Length: 220
View (cartoon, rainbow, N blue to C red):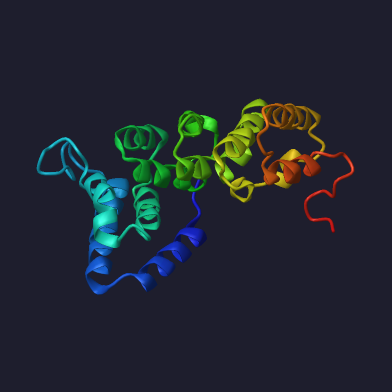
């Protein structure tokens, strides 16, 4: 899957926020990633001095230091896209990465993986307690590919961990008329009430979306 328009816009926004040194670093890093994606090279070409890690993957890891934490996600998504990272590469980068690096891999999935091959990464992130990782996991890729059962549990995970349900892509569409999700939400609300604990306000919002008579996405 390619999203050249979205990625071009991402790069434009990113460059508008970076200083000269960071922009120069980004140019070099994306050139290395592009070479890795397009060159028909001999084994070993494009590897780091250590000899076993593609140079662009080292740039991926250092993006936070080079671009700053506020722009590292965008830089990393851009590098993954430019490198045309396949599911195997994404899985390796995710497994070896920090939480911030894993978050960028999750953000890149809608641009790079057209099918469900990368769902294990989403499922892994949803088992974490890092709220930023959970929020990244419930983005467009999950909205398209998670099974109804797993998607319902992802919504509940957001409620458990305090991730705002605004992070859940296509929430209204997928929740619409979902009686099983309504049952799960009701059970969770009852458990909280019985334990003398407050029910998250977002729960009522999602519960309203499950009603068969709730407006469908796009309707007023």
